[in-house]
Image (cartoon, rainbow, N blue to C red; front, side):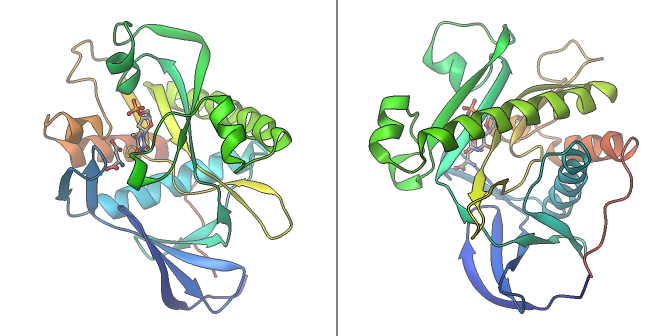
Amino acid sequence: MTSCSIGPLLHEGKAKRVHATDHTDLVAVHFKDDTTAFNAAKKASLAGKGQLNCRIAALLFEHLERQGIASHYRGLMGDDWMICQHLRVIPLEVVVRNRAAGSLCRQMPIAEGTPLDPPLLDLYYKDDAYGDPFLSEARLTRLAIVSADQLEEIQQLALAVNQSLGQLFTSVGLELVDFKIEIGLTAAGQLLLADEISPDTCRLWDQAVADQRDRILDKDRFRQDLGGVLEAYREVLKRVQGVCPEPRVYG
Ligand code: TMP
Ligand code: ASP
């Protein structure tokens, strides 16, 4: 593996910046300390959040890779950067829910924590200007951002990620309540897991804690003003790194 130097900013999102590198097929992703909720209506900067999420995402991507689920992740660079394959990210948020929480409970009569078996797979159109709306399959077909075959592959991928991460989190006493993934296409047309997987993009409940607020170890602590956001993310990192090898450094 050769080393990589960071080039100009290509894209800035709410939680990450994507830079070009001196390798045309690679980008350098910087994890910011910024955190937002409700389409950035609520914002804060939490010193150290970027490093925590970068490391957690690296551990989770490497775990998935060992299980045959490929992603854009190539390796860490420093504390809050990762080197990734350059993809064309599909503007879809793919959410898998194992228990009812969050928007599901706001949008239909279902109590928080109700088990969903089989898991519910929801698709959202990733566009802040429209507020990331829920998509029916008919609307997705009309948008034509993926083919029917790609949609099938994306759904299988999301369920495989759910299976693999669900087992990993269970092994460290955490329940994977739900999560969001994004998918990108390589120049050769291969679908790969993109973006990040972290407590910003998952709901994780401590299985040993009964209290409905105290058990939350994810971004809901920020969304719901529960405090202890970084402490929760640190706990997730501690548990995951207890069962995963040290993540690789790029170059
Ligand atoms: P929801 O309950 O708000 O629909 O969220 C479902 C899951 O998706 C939850 O784990 C948080 C994650 N998520 C994101 O990663 N980004 C987002 O913009 C939203 C709304 C949710
Ligand atoms: N990331 C989202 C935003 O601020 C929302 C969320 O995660 O709840 O747009």
